[in-house]
Image (tube, rainbow, N blue to C red):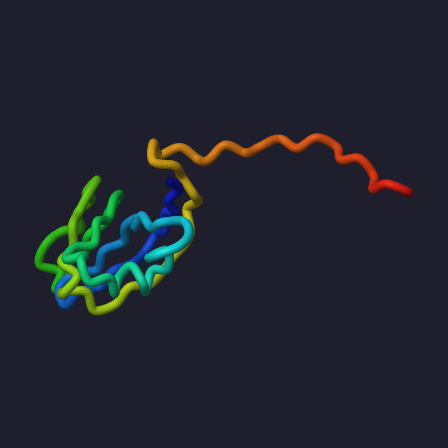
Length: 106
């Protein structure tokens, strides 16, 4: 199965978090809004996350993984698409195409 990695900014009442969200490349829950509205997901899993405390009480933090309670999310902004990857984390193989023959009768 192929997944799309999307760099997002998630805001809660107390934090601003910039991280990578992994979504299915196509089909069910492939759009960020569908993913957020899915009934069974209580947390958003983000990787390579930078956490900033909005009150400035703590220094910004960097985490390889963070789970954010979906009920605390106030806003999500898509920043950039990082590409499509397979389950092993590798980009899908690109098939090489040879030269095509001209259509019959040309």
